[in-house]
Image 1 (cartoon, rainbow, N blue to C red):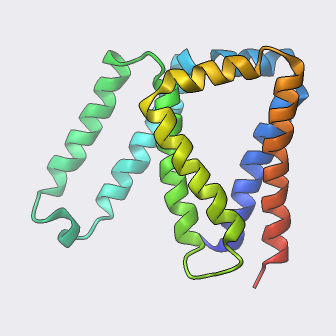
Image 2: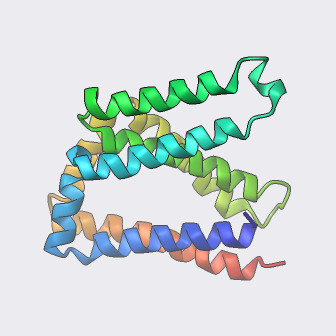
Amino acid sequence: MTLLSAYVILGVVLGTTGLSLASGLSPVCRAFRAFPRSFPAALLFWGSGVAWFVFRVTQLSEVDLSGFPRGFLVGGFVSVGLLALFCLRDLLAVRGLAALLLLSARALLDAGYMQQPRNLVLSVIAYILVVLGIWWGVTPYVFRNWLFWVLKKPLHYRVVGAFIATSGGLCLVTAFLCRS
């Protein structure tokens, strides 16, 4: 992934998420409110997180594996991921979101590696994603409570949505200003 594509993808994801939240449409708010305990969202986010993590494991070199059979690792992670879908369903969508935040932060930091100062905005957002991914992965109820607080009043979700959309816009502007 190039620095330009990383900025554009991040800007589009943040922009659409922020604008949909700031719009305050009733179906959007219902979808956000149902997200933490939604089984379809858990399938999408947790499944994507497990698939991406297993893909990363398959790309490790033999030195990184320290002689451990790759097949056992892949099978173990796929088994644990599938077991979580059936045994740990509560707030699994939030845990999947946290896994995706951590994995995407790695991809964003890899895209901006050794490209200072053009990667500054990307790096700041990536490290924010790392902190949020660890925090929400360890305590998913904090994300749930924060989301319910945001959706409680129109002012809250409009301000938070505008902030997220502005961050996405900043990424898009930076993408085209820092092109090489």
